[in-house]
Figure 1 (cartoon, rainbow, N blue to C red):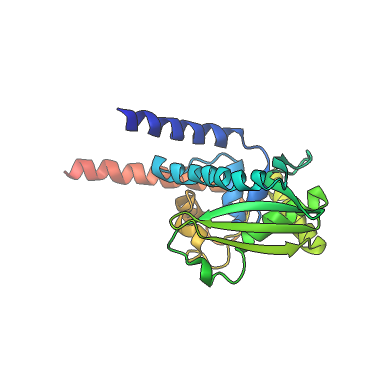
Figure 2: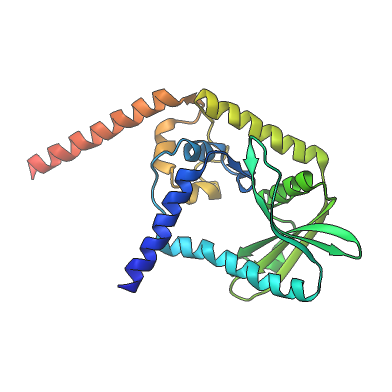
Length: 243
């Protein structure tokens, strides 16, 4: 009984969140542009399982765990800080801290024990891009990515400076993607499809397969999807007749 109620809570919350999305999130930086396009167009997708949604939720508890010692040290200046309102992108940084008068933007990321933090030589690019955008909007020169191993509680941090050129290139990338969304142009697939890690978990994988590799008109793709569904229904109906 409780399992069903808890699962329903997570699934309903995820559906509501997707209905509300009308602009890009900073966490979209470095992600597959085609999947972002489909999300903004509210394309039906394979629903995430409640168990996986709870895994995502666990990241919030890890952030709270990190928050406690930072507050005790007296270095936290702000928590869950939203960037200034703009037409393209929204987002909230985990922390802004100050050490010896130097402000830092801190973003906390949790990873599973399958990845050994000791082997990480650099932060994940998509996480690095996110913090660069926070630095850009908050006009802060230094950022920290703090990784937490969910299984061992091991910590690893990467500290870096604001890269103005990179931040502007990321924002230009968002602007170009916004144009495609407005003009109903489905972006190209990411280069190493279908072996890219994002493809392995993509809820739009079936629609991406139908779309082909190149850009295409969104309205044409919708017609293609409808045709594909009609064929599937026809084949299923024939199979039932044979049986």
